[in-house]
Image (cartoon, rainbow, N blue to C red; front, side, top):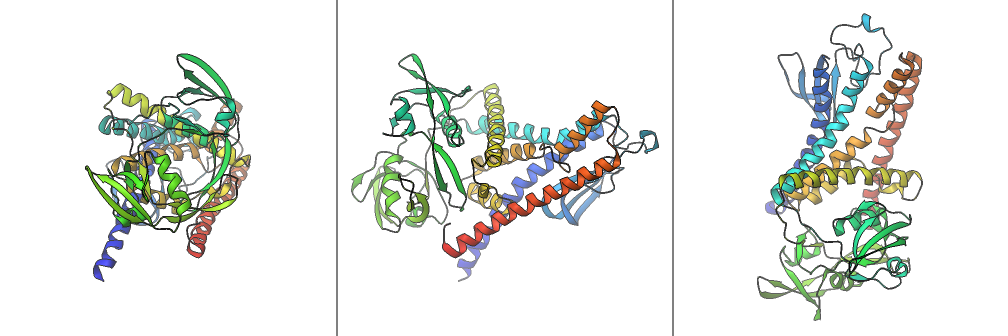
Length: 468
């Protein structure tokens, strides 16, 4: 009994540490960006806080800055000499009336630099993490070759063929099949211009992805584009989710699934086709483990999904992901290029996602807050350090972008005020700033309430109905 209690507790502690690691890295470097540029501009920084609320630890450095850790680790702030509070608004007081080291006494371009430094630090950290991971672990590349075109799907109707190599989608240079998946799944009904290399000749096709609602294991409904091109990967297991049917049955990373109920499995496409209709049924799964065959009984979990005709159905999942090609070592310049490219791709994908939600191409119920982030972090942490670091880089890039939204209270809102001040050659009136920040507070509070309600409703549905 004690062991049955200790193991889940240990798992929970590891997941909590992973969440705090991801959030801590993102918040620390965001605030460090503000801090370093503020000090460079001669601004006196009184407080550097990771977290909000009751102080857990603090020390004061030789410059008088109080470095503190607080009890609620869902953010942080840098407080300047003339800040009334961590969220204080720009002052309309004359610069000559402000004390030395005052933030609001600095020229508008310096204030803008200090504010922009937080998001910029997030983008830089994301690129550096990607670069470090690429240089350390190597890069696993799946070429953008089309192995199979699904009959009747948009790619088939447009004229793509097996053997085509996709080179460009809407002006975005395609280097891997991951690029294809990322762009197509996020298309939300937009017609894509897809260029391919076919036997050395270039061809371009207009393809409108078919949109399918897909519910993830965490209960998040995603509207994903699909054009019906398949890259066939061997049915070799790359990762097994903890507490999944595969894990309970004894399937391990590195196993190659060769048969299900006696029927040969040659690719992950075969595996999905056989597991999908078998939710709740016991399957005899044969795996090759270091040259020795093993047959294991696996009962796929049931998850919500859509049939080919769009009707709701229950699909089977066993909790395995395909093994990627062996990573290839890359030079440092190439690691840097790929790191910057992936950071930029994250930013573009987030902008597209926000626009799709605002234009109702995507459902807003996929937006989540700290609970969803903690759940995803826990799942990613199970897969090892490399996925966890890549997830940290993704979150860092997203947080940097979200902070640039032109909403008062966020960095982007401050930058809008400073742009207006630069154009008018004088600050906006104190009353206008107060109204702006009241609106900003209301918008931010509504966003906080919305994402947390989404998280709670998602958890409620999962507890009440299971899986969804």
